[in-house]
Length: 589
Image 1: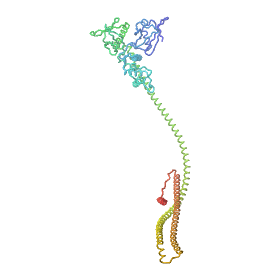
Image 2: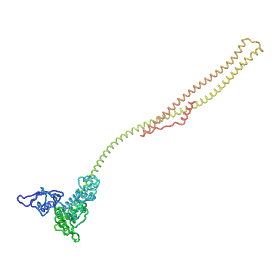
Image 3: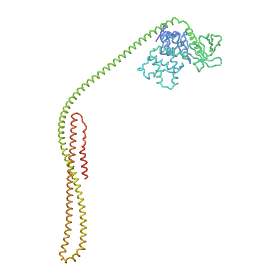
């Protein structure tokens, strides 16, 4: 931006770059401009009316200085660079930010400067307060917390906590972000200027807030001390403790401050209190200390007076502006709420529309499935009807088969009865044969015994006859009869032998007859066993056929009814069991 002074022929100018907390500006200034001219130009550009808190600071060697308003810019110890760099910063701090800072731009510039001082550790802040301040800084930057928009990691690029706090605890950036977000979520509904004011209200209670420190020595002992200058007064600190002052001199208790070269003298209002003297090694620093003391004291006295017309107008305008912004925020909040409600209603309607579309689609699909099911059921009904006809036909065939099987069963029963009758007759015949065989066995045993006895008697008789013949026959012949001719003796001997031979032939004939009867009995028994085996096989085949017929009858009956049933096992009758036991007995015999 180029600002020209009074129109002259080829005025001499110089370049100036002014750096605020959130912007950089360049100006072309006339050589004769004083510090106040440049300062007013910056304030008009920024839109700042509370000018008494701020100043233009520049760097001189190893320290800094504030641009004096009453002297020409180029006549002061400003850098000779082009452009000349100045920092537009707060030179004096209010005692109570909420009461003294009227304009929103003033609050914003103070917020940015204090925030930078805390992050640069120029102002000491505890970890808990640092997290709370960071949450208000996030609220001022991002607005209300929205979990759908502010995803984890959205603070990764923001510098929110001092490095000392980050190094003090073994916590990851994600853990710090989680803590800050927890506080940030509670600030919903707070506007940017309100969040910045809350930030400043917390920061103004910090011990190092608004304090400018300078190295000094006391008296001739050259004791190193620190002098602190702020809105409350002057404070003396130990170099290693900037939080708790050893001695304080409030502005209301100071009667006069003076210095000559390197010596400063503080005279309290209470004359009984000793005068405090300290020394500063640099003249430039002494001038800066005096300048800050005068400015802070003037503001201290100004706060305790009635506000000027300008300040009253500014506060009234600020109040109206705040009321207007509050109303606008309320209207905006209502509109936002209405928009959110409308969006929710729209989303609900869209969801309902999608739901109805899904229901309609599902209903159409269900209808198509129902039609397909109806066609399938009709086809199945037709198939079932055909199957019913087929089953009715099969049932009729099964009924005919059942009747045929009943007739067959009746025939089978008749045949079974006849077979049982034959079996009983065979049993009776077998019993008779057994009895007869036992009787014949007994007779054979008696005959064998008689034969044995007869053979023994015959043997004894022969023995006795031989003995008698040898002893008696020659004597009888010699005494009772004449001597017979040799032919007669031979005849008598042959007759005796014939009788003996006759008895032997009878025994042989009897044995042969017994043997023949035994053979006949064996043949009859074998023939009877064959008949019994044939009868047994016939009965078994009849039983198997009967079971098959019964199973077929049950299968046809079940098929006619539409379901299958396990074939029923028909056990043998008690009579068949008795018959089987008798057959086993005859086989053993």
